[in-house]
Image (cartoon, rainbow over all chains, first blue to last red; front, top):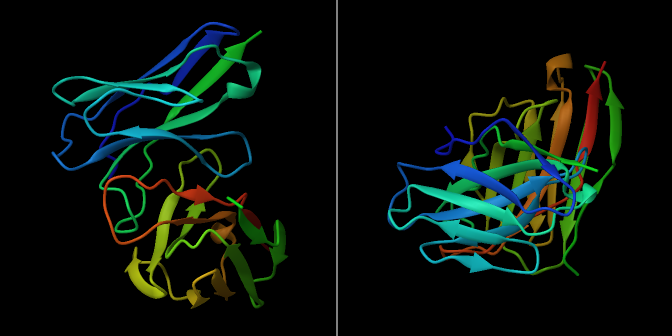
Length: 111
Length: 115
């Protein structure tokens, strides 16, 4: 079973920051938080991952709370092409166990 | 090259047919995966191969038979499928052998329809 809880859907205006929350209260000390997204009819796409510290890359920022029980994915300037289902996944990473996807958040960017 | 290539993109097969899905990557990844995704549902893990050996089978029915002939290729052999097996089948690959971070790369999937 998925170890994360996300809102089923969110709207965001184009050009604004999209903040997607995720709860993972049972995360263990060696598990990472991963974010993937899936644009309609395509394969999932990796966005970012982190363990304890906040992370930023060219796509997004990941903010992890100090107790690691929740996190927020931030898309700083959302565009229409960011409309997708966003999955927050807790995993050891590597090739050990695959990914267990939860239901995700359907983010809709409004023009 | 950061692509995972799946063929065919679409497949329609009868319940008595035998068909195969193919997946290829040239990123040097030693872990490869099959996922199944039904409409409006998240992907579900089916199989994991690590260093060309089957390491995880998520209680998948035997009518699905995976094969990893070498480190770049992953096949999924299909036989005697049911209409409820119609779904998007996704292949993915990642580095293997250590924890803590390597992301998985997914193919675009094969959309399978069983008639």
